[in-house]
Length: 184
Image (cartoon, rainbow, N blue to C red):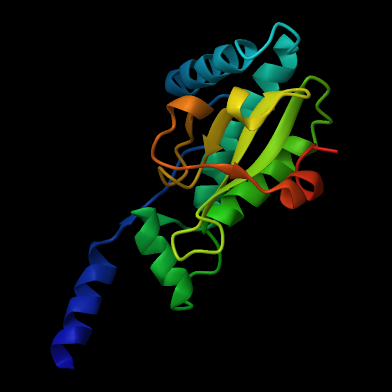
């Protein structure tokens, strides 16, 4: 038993805490500006109907708010280790669905006109279930959208076109898309 406790203490002390220098009201550095602009371009490429300023606002919030949430959750890396700390009661938030819910709530406040927000899951109701967000042009399916996953890289937003994200088999959770997202 003593060895189990020793190993546990070593693991706890060796975990990498995540801390981002983030200001939600402005781009924080050149890297953030570049990343926001890249995501904005990827969003605009979804459809000519997407408003440029709306794409920028969604990109800015997605990049910066993901980092903000990691700070709020007092995240440690890797994400699965943080999940274990939550299961043990040592942390309160920071599971994938916390990131998805908090980010989609923040994005929905923008009253988007040309972009839809979808809630997606991988392996729903299974041990390795994973939740995330997909944004698409208004009225388009998840297959034509971009995955936004703030959990995967511990607050450093991962995004990819749906068809290029081969790590997960996403399906839309229609109930959550209607409740949290912008799907009618």
